[in-house]
Length: 292
Image 1 (cartoon, rainbow, N blue to C red):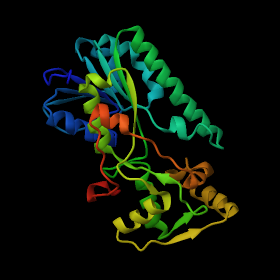
Image 2: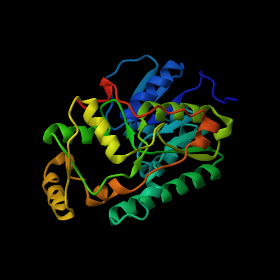
Image 3: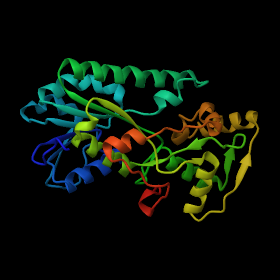
């Protein structure tokens, strides 16, 4: 049973992300008038999408926008609670991350702080929503890729193209479930429209489980490159990371990211399948998913 009529407006926070691009497409296809808020206002023309700078959200109170999807970092969302109330929010779908689980025991203090930030932000959302009789849904995707704009798969491809090999720490047999941004967008739409999803949280994982090494090998083949791996000792990897971090694109790479090559990051999405009709695709890239 659905609760969303396509005559009502939907607001989207963080609309210029790769998930945002996919979500706007889905919402427009379904016929919803969309208010898209972002720090960078898109020049894309679509009569069903009204673009606004997110700094203007507090001035959008003359617009009644009952349904919202937040793709912005969940930690910044509490700063917009009052503005959302002013727009008449009744239901909100919020993107969090499975990192709240996978990074909680990381060797990196930064990772552990990030995991705690996800936990605290989810709790703030629940408290605010329940205090104000607002329906909420939290979605936690695994490793998101797609549309050539992600910071996961695309960065690996860029590294392969630059160096023609990929360094491995150990056997890199940790399991992964990459999820396409279009599948995340569809899940957001279904979460807006489902009674059964109200006031629940769901993990979203991809339709295929494969090892980190298998995932990277497949990326080699997607770009017609012969897979070439080099197992690198810990000390050498640390040195390589220090050099890579001199490049702006890789400045946030840490050794804990390397350590996770051997860790299983697998999450059950059966509840999302049951309540959101979530049926993610297997791990496959199209031309539009490759970095430009």
